[in-house]
Image 1 (cartoon, rainbow, N blue to C red):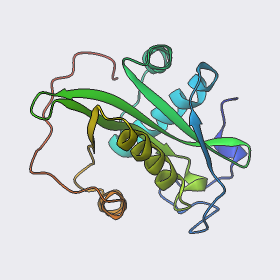
Image 2 (image 1 turned 135 degrees about the horizontal axis):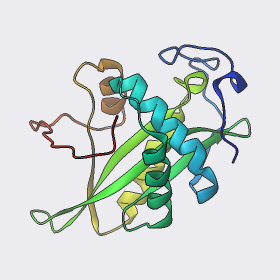
Image 3 (image 1 turned 90 degrees about the vertical axis):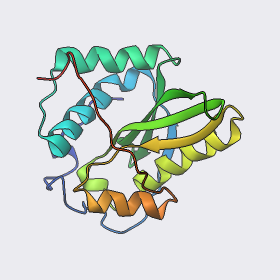
Amino acid sequence: MAQLSRSQFGNHDAGSSGIHGMVRLDVSIRDATLADAGTIAEYNTRLALESEGIKLAPEVVGPGVEAMLADRTRGRYWVAEADGNVVGQIMVTYEWSDWRNGTIWWIQSVYVHGDYRRGGVFSALYRHVESLARRDPGVCGIRLYVERENARAQKTYASLGMAMTDYQVMQTIFAGVK
């Protein structure tokens, strides 16, 4: 699928409800392919800038997306299509839990194009992933991390059945972000 520019969808703020507002869209979810790598890398770049104010280096994020798409042992991407375009994405990576003797799917790289937000795209992506996880006997749960200040996202995740934990994420990052 071709990489999409903001002008192809209109000129709306990323935080807006988009041109589709609260209208439920006809969205289809499919496995991402290498042909989607450019769009996914672009959406990851937008996500980092919008959510954390971080500018991702294209020479890092592009090959990172391609590496994930080429090797399902690292994780998996799905994309949402509406109006003939990729309008959203979700990625899952895997964490082994020895406490549960199963795999936890970590949701990451969630992005819905600004013009399609509040139209059910994320819910469709999440429900698709949740359905696949529930059918896999080796998967014991789904997790994601969310910015403390992002009350809207937290409300969305709670409406889908997710609950806050008592854990906080700590990290040491070595490379890849500029």
